[in-house]
Amino acid sequence: RSFFPGKNVDVTVRAFLRIRDRVPHRLVIAGRNVREYLENAGFSPMDLQGIVFTGFVEHEELPKLLSLADVFVLPSFYESYAMALVEAMACGCPVVVSRTGACPEITAGAGLLASPYSAEDFANKILQMLSDEGLRQDLRCRGLDRVAFFRGDRSAALVLQRIQEIVT
Image: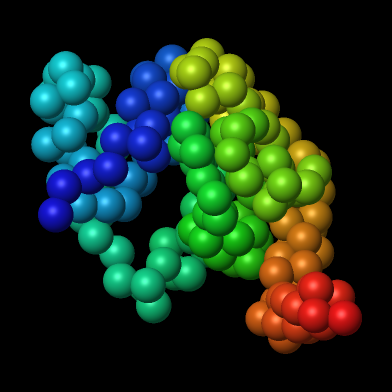
């Protein structure tokens, strides 16, 4: 299976290239065939230095990866429901996400928003997150609080309530 370019990983890589000399971090990218996609998109081996490509990550392994991250980045052009975003917040990982699609609604103030069309905007927000421990801690706490909104029992109750409203 090939990598889906709508995830906009190009912007994540370009953002990382803008800041990699200013941070001690490495960029970790999970997903099938991402390196190949980026190479075909014109990124050079030098561009990809400092980037770890994990390949596909099993769902049960994802919390381990997210718990080790200092920031989760999702510059998708469109997300209807970003499960990985919710999982990142549930793991206490602060997030920098696209200001389009469902990401702003999902984070509801518990993350930094950036334009999916601007590597510079993402780079600035990532750098802000990595350089401000207080901000990271605040967004980590807000993210954990926000995740409670997505609990399964709460979601089921809301769906049932809406069905009852429609039927009556």
